[in-house]
Image (tube, rainbow, N blue to C red):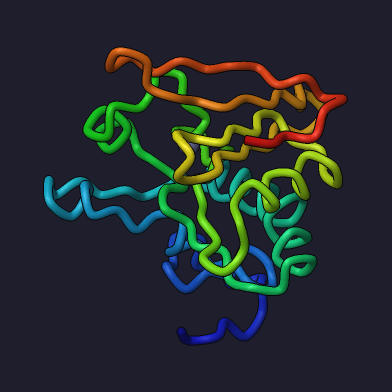
Length: 168
Ligand SMILES: [Zn+2]
């Protein structure tokens, strides 16, 4: 991946824009669904700023603690992409405030526990045992912790007690 020279490039829609030391905008906007349907999954400046805040406050500190790559499965979603993936109508992915990610070399439960113990966040969801959804909403952070699973084909969210360390 090409390195950006600095973070203050004035081309805010550049896919090479760096959001934090280890995260680039294109990791949050690339979408196979968008490519397949011909949607332009392009965030505006406010949405890019939301992604930068998610990186600076959660993803980058986490990356430095675990010291292995974090792979963003889904970051920003424009309206059409969100509909195509079956996202909720009020998904924080629409605002650039949420990211779904995986880490290949560390147990995801351990990563989930590191996030819940060390960082503020709006929502932290262990999704179907497959990836972690985390969002950042600044002063409005709720620190909601949930696991999601399918029950008879429907998605169910189960809230976790913040006092408890999450185990399966
Ligand atoms: Zn998500």
